[in-house]
Image (cartoon, rainbow, N blue to C red; front, side, top):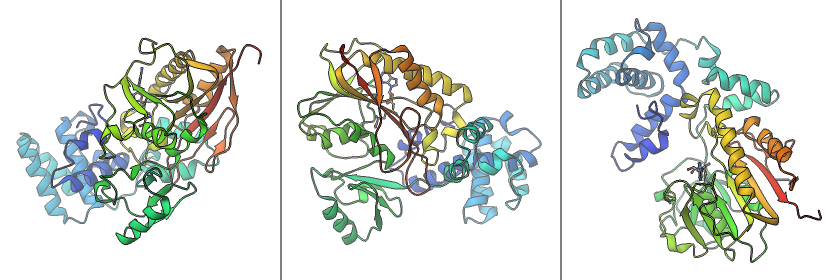
Amino acid sequence: MKVFDGQPLENALFEHHESKDSALLTFLCYTTMRHYYSLHERLSDISHRPLDRLDIEVKCLLLLGACQLQYSTLPAPLAVAHVVSAARKLGKTSAGGLINAVLRRYDTDIEPRTEEARLELPHWMINRIQSEYASEMEDIFRTSTCRAPMTLRVNRREISTDEYCKLLCEHKIPFQKTVLENAITLEKPTSKSKLPGYEEGWFSVQDLASQLPVSLLEPMPDNRILDACAAPGIKSQQIADTFAMNPVDAYDIKPQCSTWNIATPQDKWKNLTFKQGNLTTTEWWDGKPYERILLDVPCTGSGTISRHPDIKVTRQDADVSQVAELQLELLKNLWTVLAIDGILVYSTCSIFKEENDEVIEQFLADTLDAATESFELPIGRATREGWQTIPSESEHDGFYFARLRKLGRNT
Ligand SMILES: C[S@@+](CC[C@H](N)C(=O)[O-])C[C@H]1O[C@@H](n2cnc3c(N)ncnc32)[C@H](O)[C@@H]1O
């Protein structure tokens, strides 16, 4: 219900992470979101009342019931009884008959009819993917219903990757090495607090593609680095770990960066400060230009659907243009705090061109002292202005990066 009200599923579930039912709740909510379109279609075909006109509690209970029938091993009568009893607890006793009748008619063998239900994506996303990724669309569609892999970034300031791999072997936690030296993908996602070195901060949970943009900063030893749009602070930690000698300011409009994915106290990163600031203004700025900026803009998250399946249900087509406007505004504003000859790395976790190359092209057209620089990364492919990783099953999310340099007067 919170997701339909606009909250990210991950945040909504976080409140319950210590509950004894947390694993079941997580499974049910993620699976329901992942298969929302086919569950919705099968339910709509057998419900006399349109699903979207039912009370939100009843709609959610029907979806959760259908999810259990379709994807859990719970015997059907028990699954239906649980949902009816949940309706009672929510004060929806009168809906018990409807829920019971619909779920008893639910047929798990019916194949999805429409393209939305078959691909488990809304039309607008299907259209964008088909028009922008003709040769990769089947992979993108398939990946979007998979469970995302769990990748760790070993904090090499604390422990070497080899030593950490040895620890994983000792704890009998199967993993695979990746194309990045200190990134390891676990064969099965596991609770991070159960992994060795959690308390000590020996690793962060961070998608493989999300680990790439920091390397593009290439700071000189005394360069000041700005991590712009920093919350929840995953890349801030990576910057502070990787460039331990550089002062790093991490700003976000949110009051504080959570350190959910790592239990270590904040003072561990001596070179890092988190501050609050609205980066569409310069009110927060101390007037000293930054030599390096990572701008990890807010985006639709369309490259992370397997990790955040709620995105496909909550985002609308119009959000893409809206977010692209904010991205351009942030980029133009942060350009003013970048030193001459400085580098700004622009990053999104979206696969849509409107948030990626098109933002950069508009920016270049409006900004005389900006030029993109080309680069190569171990995964993904070059685009007109930058680099795109394509979401890949059991490997990584879809990210976009562009590297811009501020030209001096004589350049
Ligand atoms: C993609 S997330 C950043 C993820 C982060 N870099 C990380 O690796 O953990 C985008 C962030 O932009 C922030 N944001 C959105 N509008 C902003 C603004 N006007 N000023 C500052 N931050 C903003 C959001 O609060 C959000 O935390």
